[in-house]
Length: 317
Image (cartoon, rainbow, N blue to C red; front, side, top):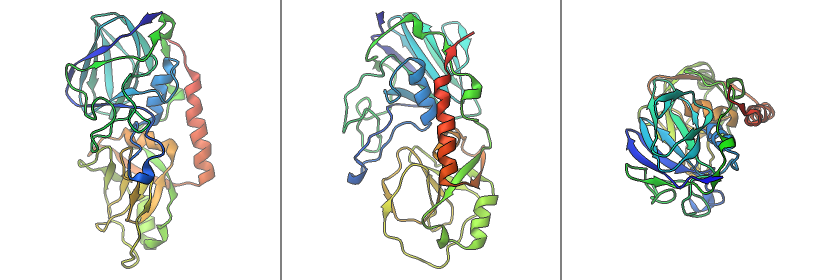
């Protein structure tokens, strides 16, 4: 057993924060849950190292990232939209890897996909804020000083590692079916009947793209606008990740990891939890998504089926 004292951030061309599974129990006070954009890839990175699935990891998006191992260690890297190289070798994502002290770990952004996750044994070690290590940038708390990672930061693992943790992989057939243009299951929401019949049909038959102003708070969809039946007022009420709000311009917004706990716009539906990773990995102004109505029962069955894939980790061949 050896300690992995830290990785050093050498360069970041994009966006990187520390996230755990989310800040639970504080939404009633107006604090978003935060946590990973792609919950499956996040949990898979931890599972590859034998960590509890809620351990903190590094979430990387929107650009290249370079780290350097300051000691011998083992890491796991998952996600979509990145090429991984360690020292002089290239590797596929969704595996665990031995890294010798001094070697550099490079994640280079590709066209498809948005988020990658880098996990270390025992999880990233940072203080708990309101019971979580997740970074909430708008509130400037959690993670590392409540901010994005930057060159010079050191990432410390919470526990030792074993060489046996290296060389594992999660086969592609046991991962979500990531696609450039996914069809997402949607459960019709509490205010679906606020919208005209024609708008419901439009919502379930049209293609939407992800707007360039989208972020961890919400994915703004661009496509045919939806029309309400008159101007009905709505008192703000609770929301969760995946809820689809429709503001006055008729263009839906899907609430994501840093989304507000409440909202006052009508909710036409909610993206099934099993399909949220597919949405999270869609590229703004490139991917085209469609919605297909599903039921709570079917959505639950799909969720169980998808996340059971986490138990299919095997030695890399």
